[in-house]
Image (cartoon, rainbow, N blue to C red; front, side, top):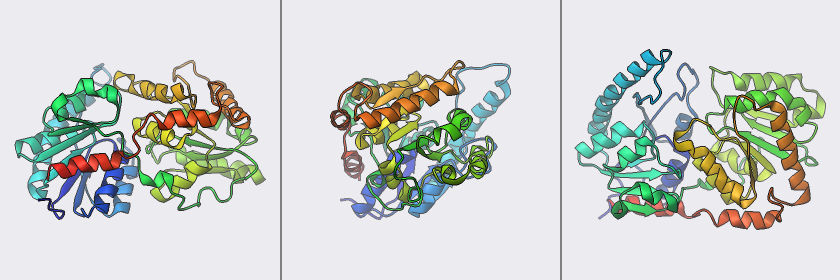
Length: 388
């Protein structure tokens, strides 16, 4: 019989679907959670990670885990950091065992990534029930390892079945946080020009410096055409957020009002931001792609080129197939002018009511919704409950 007071430990590198599952489990009466993650998402960054801030919002205990990962490409420049990272892996396993012994969770729910590896392995050693969730189409090295020790593997896409043992693999879809469908706080959108379309720029919770620096080059010109909500990330290494604030101060009159820079978008704000956005310029992580498909948003996607198995490009192709997505390949020859022209193209598509494939945009949106499982949080929560 389920004991809803028993502790559920959440860990892994994909926070957004984790929040969606926690919300569903809370709705079912579970209230005892602990989160193991990174308090800082970048070496040298003095600002806490969006993950940490979100967990604080949920009122869940956060445990900072310090561990390393295997560097697949060794060079003279990264030799010493790579050795240090290997040593940190061993430290991570020791720390993970202590965390599990002190907290004694009933179930571990992993959302992939190298951070989850020591927690899952030591959980297996201590005979704790384990679930892992794979968000992407192409699984990475960490989740391949984790799946060997998990009792259940939840996958987001039918094509991912090939990577995991069939007997313990369940197609659940990628959990989408409920907040993206809700209109709560309009703090970031209330003063925008209602006569102009709105562009939402986001590099994910951490922001994306490669996107930000190119946007800054043509920002004043672009603001002649549209409102911009710009989620920059909060890195004190790149200082993109501070640069965005400084640029806003230099803008005059209505142009300044149309530009809304923000380091991260809270769970209360995200629904209004997505609702207001006519076009989204973003990376193409699995969680972002799932939300864009569910909301039927016209999007310009700039995949991170160094992801395992080029997973972000493959994610982006899913949206491209519906006519809602236009892919920009990040490379040294990519110019800011090319991005600017693509954004103008997308804004023009909004005026015509057509997707990038020339079809009616409502038809494109229907195709997008058919590609995802909207009740994924419930399906993952069902799997969690099955192990109690």
